[in-house]
Image (cartoon, rainbow, N blue to C red; front, side, top):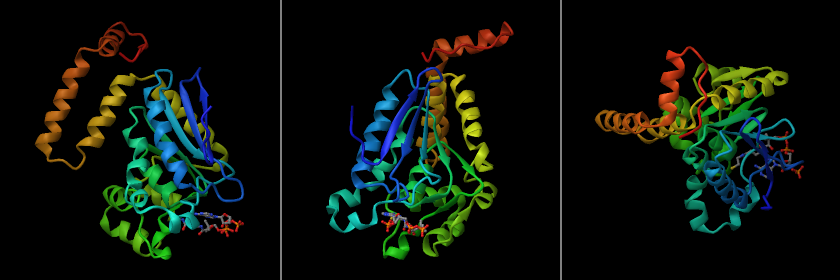
Length: 258
Ligand code: COA
């Protein structure tokens, strides 16, 4: 079994879901540099695993994470520090839908990881932020870029340059998270989305994710072209045939992912 520094992976094969839980008791689930590399490898492995339809990322003990392991930054090699964004982009590269289940603190690299996920579902006590400027640093794992694209430059400057923490309420109003629920209802809310996604075609979901992510900031004509090509590829899948036939036959579809 692979050793992970500060996180574990559990699989529920019946529901096709793998859950990655950040878990560093007493240290608010701080994420080490080794953990970032291991998380990238774990997402790649889960992406290849046909039994996994959805990945959930979360934190133990009432917090997602308070962020990167601050003290280790001073001794990290420069090349490690300039490529942080690659490892943290792993949920985005993963062909499976990835849900961030967020409660409590979701700071620094934790927030950046969640920004690379497809869906963010949070409890009403969640606090999201990128406080790195207070350390004389900037968010270096994709935070400056993804946050501004998701909430706009003005709000991103408040969060990054003034260390404004985003409440769950604001996160919902700004379209940053898809759902906010009381803490006691968080698991049920995540389970609903897992089951919803698990009933859909894995190949169509993977293609939708790829087209949405890859051409988000490309010119419109490039995006439209890629969308058309992806549509053409999906046209020949068994899942598309099943989707159409099940609609016509008035029965629920059974998608096999091919
Ligand atoms: N890296 C390493 N350790 C961390 C950490 C981090 N990012 N965040 C918290 N911890 C540790 C603390 O050092 C403390 O350990 P200790 O008890 O051995 O001293 C423990 O977790 C609890 O943190 P503490 O600060 O006592 O809790 P709090 O409730 O008073 O404050 C925060 C919570 C999140 C506001 C505060 O811990 C904080 O500001 N953390 C850093 C956030 C940050 O800058 N993240 C970006 C990093 S790049």
